[in-house]
Length: 264
Image (cartoon, rainbow, N blue to C red; front, side, top):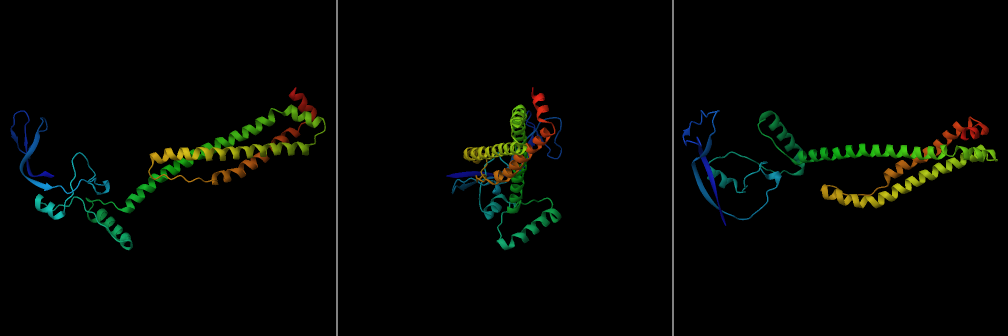
């Protein structure tokens, strides 16, 4: 197959209603005008292959077809030596030096030019990843805080709703030490249950959510870890011990008779 490319060397501007040719240096601002090729040449090329040009090698704009040809052919046929895009590769040991050279060239010597490198894409990707890390960290903190508050609420509600029952147990002979031990063990059971449920939900929901995220983000890789649960488990354990002890101390300030009367 062949494809014909048109190289335009001169345009002319005209009035679309009257066809009058307009002066390119004095185009009207209050009426519409169009332009068309005046001087050009058409050249036929033999198509070697159909390819998809990666964005990193494209001109960063869309709407027209892109063609890949040798630099010599382009300069000869177009009559210009202007470089639209220049791609180069350097060895690993020279990457840092080339990066510094291009940064100095485009920032100080030729600010009208710009460049992209592997380091540029890596920095953009790190920024994109850090955004997810920050959002994930904030959401994890909020969910964790809500979980801790619910855990405290469960323990406090369990103890406060049984004030009369606890007072009755002490009235028939249960010592304060035995009551504290019972409340502590209940708190530990709550903590152990919360950790176990969290672990089971993570094992069950992790693979399902990973498939969804992997379909959205190409760079996502699922890796199961119990580290967050192991970090939270001691906190729940301490709360399971500290909260019952704190509530018991608040109860023990009143006698058993007073607590029975309050419950009634």
